[in-house]
Image (cartoon, rainbow, N blue to C red; front, side, top):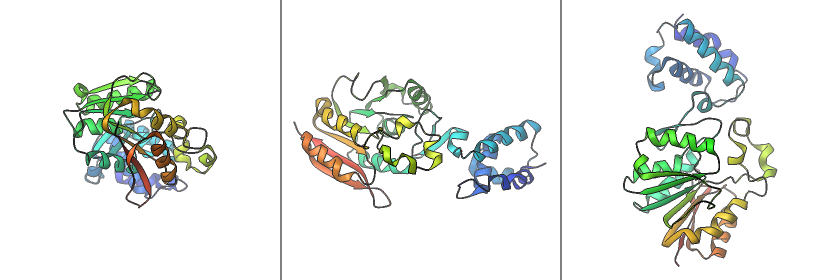
Length: 278
């Protein structure tokens, strides 16, 4: 049996899965099994499928039938042009977070960067790759998340400029930084049940919700950030699209200046930025 025949034979099994394109999902899984780039799988559709490949593919299809996201199945997610390792211990990096990356890059290269709650390292490691001379500290409270970030750090060859640190926000952090960034848990507990199952079922809960009103992590980060920022340093955080006013108020109360709220590509509030002028 060739790949084209196998894919057509199993596509009905994903009929109940929430997806934009069943055939695309199956081609990605087939490419992963075949160890070829997904963009080139169409060139391999007439390749013979070995028995080992067939069993592996069947296992992955079964996982997709349980609504496991493709990225969690193949343990890869594209972000800012780089392929990040991901697993069940880290939040999948998403396009919304690229708004934060774009805002940071507009500042120009920063010497010292702190990424709080790094997860897979999507934010901190991207900035380290874009700013090769920067010293970047990436923190997370989860050892398992830091293990994933370490894999990505080595993959992107940025280890010389990056330090990984286990820390509960600023708990173990020392020194001052030109830029502090974070994408903290901002889903309110009352919103939890409304999340897509692919999100709440396969991303770590602690990376999604603060188990409260969605603002508690911002209260900690914004209130403490000034003690870790150089004069005229920036604090930039990703937010939920309804949180712009509340987070800006926290910035103002903490003494930040030049406070702005930036939209994502859909025009929704997504990033709050402020300058520490003291």
